[in-house]
Length: 377
Image (tube, rainbow, N blue to C red):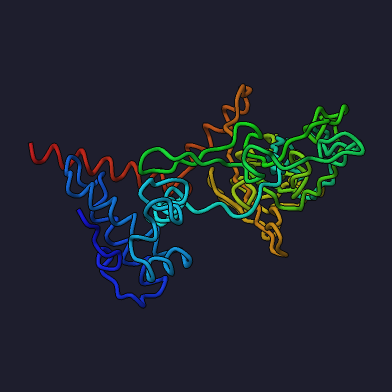
């Protein structure tokens, strides 16, 4: 059975350019691919015919021979015909397979260098340290570049060589039927390089484990959970690769007096019944180490909050300051003497609705409520 003209197989003119050839091949190969047409012998044969035509026409030398001699150029050993679908076909189909499924072609040779891992360090600081900021030192065990081999992993006087198995690419390809599979080179573990004489200090890794002391600048205003990144201070890369980063995760210890809410601080202060009734003032500490006075007006109720502007925490990387809120809790006196009881009882007798407006209003509404219920009954 005579073969069809390769140009007719792909549906292109004889003067078609490379892009036209590749576009036509893509479209036909997708349409007649055996995986898309399982069990269809016609599509399988058509797929082989399409690949055979493209394998010849994409190559300038083979295409020139075909244009001059036709199919005879590849018969009886002339020019290594495509019928066998050897390495050239595998490479051709791999190109198209990459286009179809997003498997990008490898770019350049491997270097054997790998980026080091990122490291995490947890640090506790106090609320005062968060307010003022802090310069701290941390000691961390980490991998560092081997000084003996300067991170190459090779013994002094030698250097890594390209892997003979993958040619230095770090990946190898195997043709299986219509597909070409690519996988990591097992000989070099994907690094593209092999070391015949490894460095005795690092056993060829290019890095060694050491404990380092690093300085960390904690800015004022950091909150619980703040993360500080120290670029390049993580684990050293393998065989001279770039180092990872170090991340400092901050947590704030509980404070005895203040509770933090963003940049604001809150505290609760007990005051006597007399101070709440007659008014007065008291001192409270501030987070900067000083103190301030809070004036309580006459008739202050328990739970009332007083705002002290700009007495809170600094806002991170800003000149703004939060506020401080003082909530007063009126303390009920305990263990009264006989005389104190008598005075309170006398005070209760002399009290009026104006003295306890909230109580008078509340119990008045209660009385009205029960009165309405009795009337409806």
